[in-house]
Length: 338
Image (cartoon, rainbow, N blue to C red; front, side):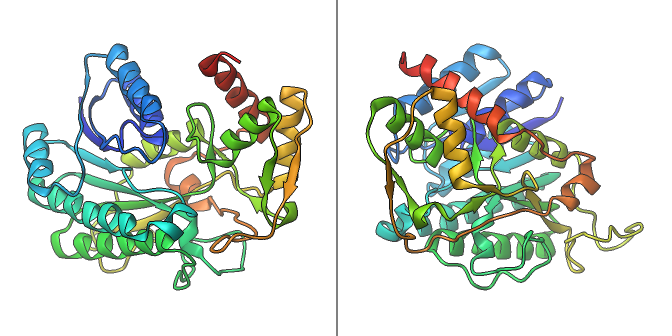
């Protein structure tokens, strides 16, 4: 039974990943800072549910920036695998609070990599984001594209994580996989995310803000599909430079390290207005639409090429966004008693 250390275990994605890992018999050790970026009660309930689900789950609460406490915890666990999901999220929040992203996403990630180095873990997996593609216009986005034009400090910190991860993989031989997420949504989603805000606004009869006048496209990825991709990648660590077999044509595998980047997306782009219409149909109410200009740092479209994920794991996310919206609205109504 593998021991897996998951940072950000009370977060949206971390919660779903921990559930899946427990279902498959792993021993899961969580860590979450329980910051007040959004309602902490949702995070506390996620941890409560995981603890109630299995005695193979336990968790601590402190910040990644606390290097000594983090290392002591990791030493006590002695994990086989680390999945690093904890981060200061939110593109728009980064415009007002950039230092929080340096502290958590850069310093905190460095501390996690130090744990992986000392403990010589079998596989280090770390979350990146489609935002690293920045001003790139060639779509679908391919992991082998250059990503030198980040448009926000959030994207820049995630690109820095990828660079730091590659250097540690090269220097210390740590098999490292970075996965880039594409607009994740689903039950237990964050209150600052579009689906949550749209659903809340429509149910309460308040206007919803629609940026770029709705002329936006996103690769909406259902959260259970996403964590299935992460789970399968755990078993596909990048090989060392020597003794590699036949190369995968679409591989991002580094020639200098056991390191690769993998997109996890639905491999399709959906018009934002179609997404909103799906929410309206599910709720049975038309939204009050407040059309706005594009926000600073935002991009008009994202779209993943998930060929590498499929080649490595045989899996491709495929939940239709209408089904995902249905599941989220059902959760929202139950959780908030609407």
